[in-house]
Length: 325
Image (cartoon, rainbow, N blue to C red; front, side, top):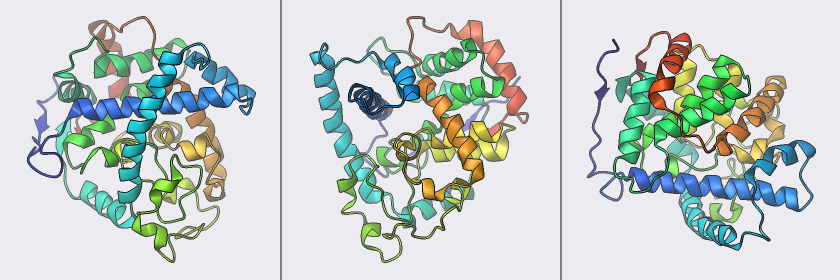
């Protein structure tokens, strides 16, 4: 039997809004996904997508001409997302990212198995959800099951299961939504125009820094993505946990770390940072991306029917069972 979870209850009176609202975080995350889905669909419609992108993104089944309601929802999501990105782009500085990583390494926030973490995320985000949307566990299982149905390796299936578990960060050390969710990007060099809403970086102090504002900044061409400091959030948080405490292969770690790095894997920016390893990692991230955005189906996963299979999968790649969060 797994030991009981030791969970540090956040002080809801500190840091932001006097309350860590899990539903609000998930609503923002859904808006971000909706914008990314439609941006890709529009790219196909405009004839600028590759055949690979066409094959992937036709799953979105979004038709601007035929579905005016959905397009209005997209425009509204864009408005909400733009306000989110304005705050994220102003606050994701080199100084903040160094502090966030130092804070991450300085303490253990909780000790839980992967399944216990899934259950904890479920309660924190879904406990007051009034609608009929999937629970967090069901959503994670849906992604994993889509990968499993396509015959992908066991490590790939597990990656689908855990890829959003880093959202637990919101209930630990986060200062807001802006350092948990959202598209990611490098800090310490010029902010590329391929980043969503690039004009919202104007109030970021690093934009005027004599080093950080240059194209290469603190990096050298070909340095490799492993040595790049990406904006801190749930992807980086889980990546460092999995890197240090799992047996997942490099491809899985790349899927976790880079699946929100849209300027790189979707827009082709920051290729000057890449080394030989990154070519392989980029292919892995692109293989994972459809399962991140388009894994929804009519079938709601039956948690109890699937639990035993995924517990075995978790134990295979997290042999210590209990993970330090």
